[in-house]
Image 1 (cartoon, rainbow, N blue to C red):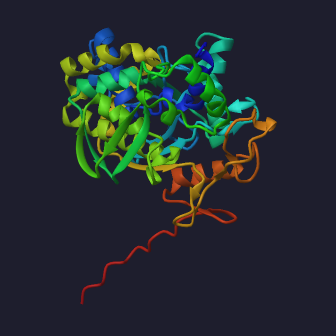
Image 2: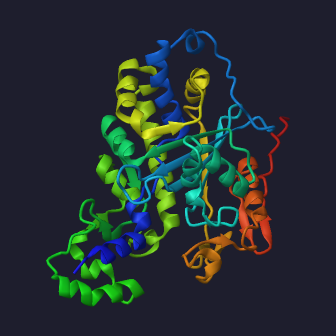
Length: 398
């Protein structure tokens, strides 16, 4: 009996689990670290960083710098160029504020006739080096924002980078268990079943009446994270951000997106606490570790400016949000809905705007509100801007 059917079907069911689920570096790391290192190697740090403190980077009309961060599986993993982590950063160099927005990979894009996470792959298939421009165009269209720069990284680089800086200190918000975390290299393991036994469950797995984790338990491991502060090495941090089948609230892609943002912030803090951006030896070691895992459209002539920007944003205030379907348990409304599976969406499980397939106006309004104000709320009939706190005038002295 050829077990290829079960293996391929399993991979399709677990495509996202097999791909990268996260993006590793905030601009302070991915750009401020990666490019700093490269600048040291190529420019010997250069007078542009040491003496010239001005920053000359592309900016939006609002004087902001918009950066797209993409995470991919890479290597031999299924869908190695599917960007299953999509994080948008809008940076205000003057106020030192950063708005971070996570977009779900399952969002359907009619212009692509596919999920939004395929944009990079489609671009690369059309032209080598076309992945980032294609992803920036598609995702920028959804968010209603111009994108100045893009950075893509695969998860191997993430694991190595975390280990290079000695691990991360993460505060886990709530305990959770995931009994279906895939074990790399075990995707096709028969778990001791005979060809006849596999044949008998193939149809059940294909129709969804049988669960692969139950039929092939050796392909999965049990993850458990306790709530509270934890020190994680690269492998553990990877599992923390990849887990998507946890029991309870942590079992959603949206909870996972929040964990991704938490890890990004922890990495940023660790890099600064170690003084990586100011230490040539540490910086070059980190660069040599991750150089093969990064793709960016930032030009060499802009490296020094990103270094200076990263240094200036050391104490930046970061607000983060996730574009999602809301939370029924709290009554929080979301911007997305899950439509019935149909040929319109390639018979796939997808997400679309609550206002209709391809209508991104409300998402764009929400993102614009987050960039300008932060803490914006999705209302029943639109986006609610938070009411500013009144400014108290000092009392006049007698």
